[in-house]
Amino acid sequence: MQTTRRCALLRELGLTPTVQRLAVLEFLEGTSRHPTADIVLAEIQKRHPTISRATVYNTLDALTKAGVILRITIDPAVTRYDADLKPHAHFRCRTCGAVYDIRLERENTLGDVFQGHRIETVRTYAYGVCLQCLRKEGIASA
Ligand SMILES: [Zn+2]
Ligand SMILES: [Zn+2]
Image (tube, rainbow, N blue to C red; front, side, top):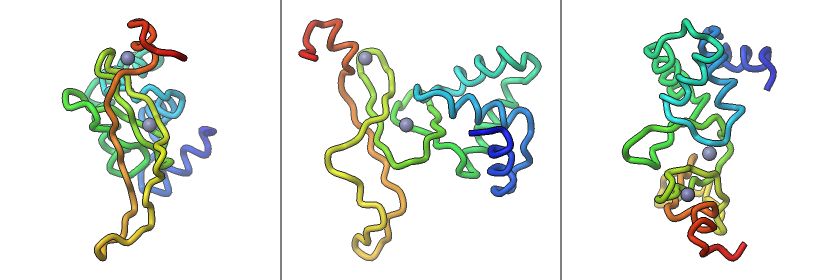
């Protein structure tokens, strides 16, 4: 996404497009690793050394509340963030802790009405061992 597009998106959602917000959003859009707040902080400070921890945390909070990014709670110990808002499921490796985007065989039920409730979002968290770890253990056939 272009910076001008990001600015417009933030304004649409009632957020002033500050340098911090744009930097956090740009970083999250460029990664598929679902970083924790501390990883976001470290990356942002590489390019903007003056941005404080509190600012990065508040920015993640504001972007989450505005619906620009998702807070992923797949890992009970840490909160992770994702700028990919398209419906997708997450898979966490119990060996290395990495979180991957996955597609599930059975598609989500977006828009379905279930017992009178209309489903707008489906979040699926799957747990197991990732391909890299299986390869290290010599188990993967791929
Ligand atoms: Zn793994
Ligand atoms: Zn994701």
